[in-house]
Picture 1 (cartoon, rainbow, N blue to C red):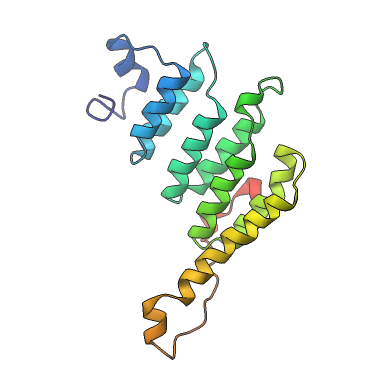
Picture 2 (cartoon, one colour):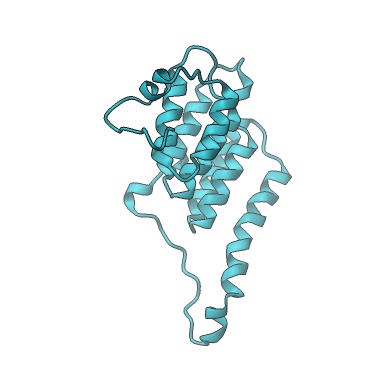
Length: 182
């Protein structure tokens, strides 16, 4: 219904209110799963859910939004969502950033070959979740190792003996993440 009746010039709530649908945290989560490939509509629905007085979105909903936007390399939106999570009330621990939040972001950054930004995200993780231990660091090493393994074992690489070495790709200027810079 949201995909067929989405109008960018009207608020998301008009479609839901006209059909008498009240948004619960579980309904929000399931709807975001269905909107995985429509990041703009998902973000619009998520912002609408933030305006509801009933209950704020859970960390699972935030993590899903971060994953949806990181898939399409909208890392600035991911960064804003993490900052927004960190600004939630401390007593509401269900919407605070956690290791899963940062693991989603780090995995997507490394898949996009933004390794430096992934390392910055790892460094910033301590400010949001508290302590960082060796399992977190092992995750970073393991995740950053996988793209290199895939590049080395790729058939195109094996067939061309004069291939150039893997060069780190630096992001364009608009991709610099303010929350991930020191």
